[in-house]
Amino acid sequence: MTLELTDELLLRRMLEGDETAFTALYRRRQGGVYRFALQMSGSVEIAEEITQDTFMLLMRQGSRFDPAKGSVSGFLFGIARNLVRRHLEKVRNESWAELAADDPVADSRENVLDEMTRRETINAVRRAVLSLPPVYREALVLCELQGLSYLDAAAVLDCPVGTVRSRLNRGRTLLADKFRAPAMKAGAVAI
Amino acid sequence: MTCAEFQSKVAELGREGIADAAGLHHAELCGGCGALLNEQRRLTAALAALAGDDREFESSAGMEHRLLLAFRENRAAARRAHASAKRIWLAVSAAVAAGVLILMIASEPSRPQAEIAGSPAPRPAIVETPAPPRAQPPRPQIASVEPPKTVVEDSGVRRPLPRRGAPASSDATLASQTLSTEFLPLGAGYIDRNERTQLLRVSIPRSALLSMGIPVRADRMDERVQADVLLGEDGTARAIRFVTTAQYR
Ligand SMILES: [Zn+2]
Image 1 (tube, rainbow over the protein chains, first blue to last red):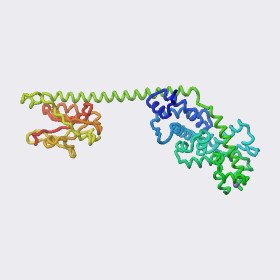
Image 2: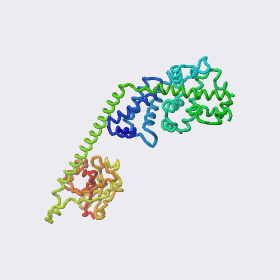
Image 3: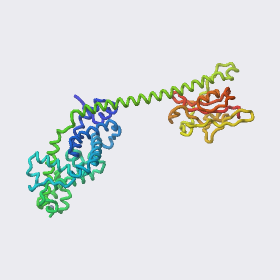
Image 4: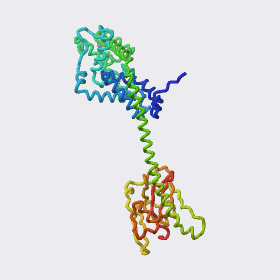
């Protein structure tokens, strides 16, 4: 029987110089960090860079981890989130402006999600998520795509649980709006 | 439930499938709100599909190797920094200890009491003390200290003047019989508040003061002065002060 070491223990050993512990922690958590960065940036290169920088920072600043404030996984998401934000601020004047623009996914079909193939749906949702303002996007990526609880997401985003909830709801409303045919847009459905 | 109330919670209803009876009832009766709920449910399914599709995505195979190299380099750099700091500390401690040893050796022959009494040479007086620098760690201004001020008395003996606020010796007898300068830091001069210190009374030839950067008149080189050396727990000298003896009472 092999006991799986907790993230916390692996981090502690890593900080003491244990290479095996670092490798184990990296293998366990790199996927989530990479996917978060990918879903936030839409770029494989950026996701790769952010994942690498996240673990580099963990080596140097891992001692700042405070278990009272959340999990090691949340700590890693927090580092990655700051790196993503820095990246987004840097590119805001370029591609970010286009991504953030209101670019509805809907076409002439009444509701795109009803009629798309699975692949089409996935691609369309990915683009729609990337077009959300970062503040809603990160709540949505963490809670919907990374499966974090409101509480864990609040620790990562450094905000109250209620704020996570409202950002997520707003993000979902914006997202739904993008898939809606023009005739079904908000206002038209309100009775 | 009104449409506005329903719409304020429709995202959560669609996400979590909460069995909100009132909400579901409204969605059944109200076509527009029912459509919104269905929309949110489809969105939940679409997001789950995206999450499932992304589940296989990972960073490149080469990254683990790159990070491992960086990890080793970080460790090596930390070890180098640690070893370097240790070497510097050892060098400073050794230099200070050597200085004190020289001072003590230089003071050995001048023990007239021992010679007159014909008794075994007394060891330097060691006074365990809650040393003043512990309660009042060496302050920056005494690092660039001037030589102790002196006055010339009628006898021609130069007597060090205690500085204003100079800490008195903790030894009651000494305090009543001696005047002293402030402690002058030696080496790093740092003393931990919790460190136990010892005070060592030594007699030093004035010529030895030159090595500490304290000017000495050429015609008084042969005279001796008394000093208290403050020793840290590790035996290194941390500070020194000059004292006058009972003859000035
Ligand atoms: Zn309604």
